[in-house]
Length: 304
Image 1 (tube, rainbow, N blue to C red):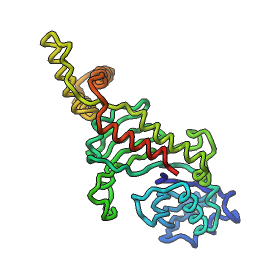
Image 2 (cartoon, rainbow, N blue to C red; image 1 turned 90 degrees about the horizontal axis):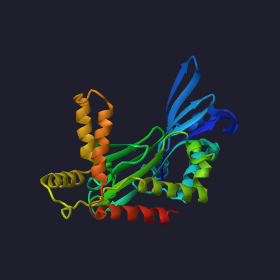
Image 3 (cartoon, rainbow, N blue to C red; image 1 turned 60 degrees about the vertical axis):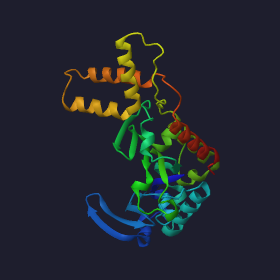
Image 4 (cartoon, helix red, strand yellow; image 1 turned 90 degrees about the vertical axis):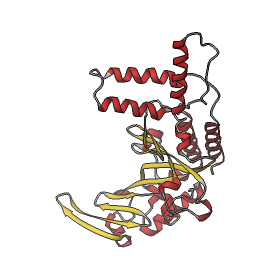
């Protein structure tokens, strides 16, 4: 379930205490000498490696490193341990002691419909900014973590032939900063394959998705309409729910670009009013939402 895993090996945790002893095991090496001293960069099994006198930085995908570039396969807990041991063998130092500076939990979810069809039902998430950067990708951002849903088939060309005609929604939960502080425990590379830690982090991956506000299935609510104005409001609410969260974001961005309101709080006021309409109960949970929630729950339940 791990994808990107960035690591920092402090000089004191490097076997032999000399960080530059790892240099012969890198490929594509470049060197630099400046006022901070000597440093070098290179690659090892898909990782970008930076070496200086104080430590070694590794940035890249642990999954791709283990699977020799395959970016569809899911890294299990056991495979995570083997991937870290593989890096340790290549660099001739114990990578298990490395501090985790970023970790992404991710897998591919086969879906009945193309991934973008599901995004209209994904609403706001508390303390996150929702951003649909392209038709294929939906982000939820804050300053130290991120959720991303995207179309894996559009993102990569290296897909096994049997999967090329499948719909593949990739869901990633990224801890991009202060990993140990966020998880309230010291997180090293060897922590990642601890059974209890692994299961807890997968459950966190699931709960982060669950906390996204879901837009209900759109339906007309005509039973309480008695005036033309109420009918007008009902139609507007139906069309807004049918378009989903993205239309609100697009409309607000257009207003801001045109400096429509002189007072910035007016944008927040409008956003709140539109979300009140968007979130109003108007029918059953969408079949697409139910499908995705069930699939992600099953991944979390059976991940090993």
